[in-house]
Image (cartoon, rainbow, N blue to C red; front, side, top):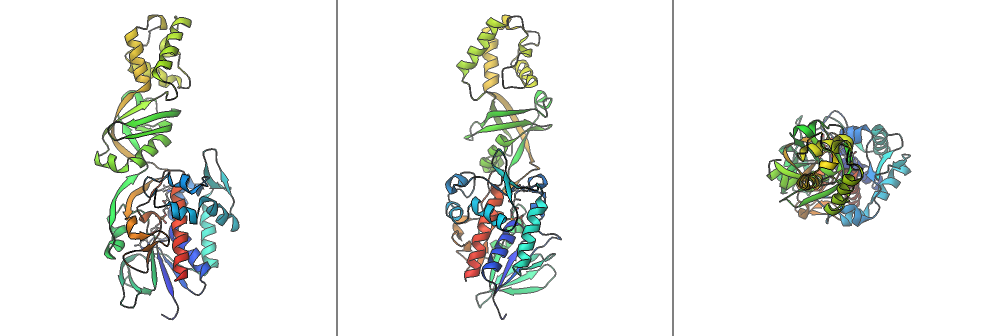
Length: 409
Ligand SMILES: Cc1cc2nc3c(=O)[nH]c(=O)nc-3n(C[C@H](O)[C@H](O)[C@H](O)COP(=O)(O)OP(=O)(O)OC[C@H]3O[C@@H](n4cnc5c(N)ncnc54)[C@H](O)[C@@H]3O)c2cc1C
């Protein structure tokens, strides 16, 4: 090898960001991206329902780290180096303006992930990075002279001075094996960002209903979250469920995704306030059927089912609500208990909890502490965030830092 060569393994978000950063910072370095699939950036394409939720309008590094069930503390330094505002500026400099939705998620104005793909591809090409498809890396070995030799799935061998592993979430054991073969440890991979299966028939009848704010908790697992809830054909989804699944990824895996879930449908009110509200209806509308007079902001169909689940017959009027039945209704409103019996992938975004152990990586450079010249970026690391653009932000940040560091050496 005459000049320095950097090989990026994996043509996803993190790999591209690292390759572009390195190639722009060190034009004399030959930067190659090896992608095993027939397309680059295939997850970017499907991300955010085809719109690509690029990042989140959260511009304080510490606040941003709080959105990472894995990597929270370790990411503070990296996010101070390359923050969400840097992502916005990076894309804007290259002609892609991002817009912010009410909930803070940021998308390209075009609402098309293809805009992001085109931007990354053209930036990589302009920086003279060599982009190679259908080049799966099977093995990597350290050479005596400080570099690496990579063996590709077609038997070809490639030598390089630095290698970056950006092969994505290692849910399939093989994805992390190159890192393991070079001395690294994987935190066992389990899914994060999934939805809950619940077989309760009355809940399933409510498929399609959403409630803006509920409090969901898993007693015994110390998990409690507030947020919007969506009833699906197989159980429950929505931001509050995804957050529980992310913070509880490990413990819920240990429970084999079978656990009790409690919902408080009116978390802004305490039992006393609810009791007062029920009592006032008893006084002001004694002749109305209970099941027909929902308490705001609960949807009418949900209210009706909760009344029935409390054991109150459909034809009960407020005037005849007994003290015991009122107590039972309050319990149902603040503590409905469901049995979760499994999980499904959330189609909008899912990630892997687990990956290369962070203590083995220098997060100032993303270089391995075990194998000099080896770098990591993206979801292969034991870093994963909540849904909302945080996972891409981690990919951009770690990719950018690795790219700069590889260019400097
Ligand atoms: C359906 C879906 C939607 C999502 N939407 C969003 C979103 O809107 N916003 C957000 O922030 N996050 C989203 N995510 C998460 C986000 O896509 C990932 O966190 C992010 O893509 C991780 O980037 P990465 O580069 O580390 O890995 P990846 O994007 O997975 O890229 C890794 C690449 O490496 C390649 N590769 C693997 N092994 C080898 C090998 N041995 N040799 C060569 N190449 C290899 C793979 O083929 C792949 O192309 C979504 C995830 C999914 C599944």
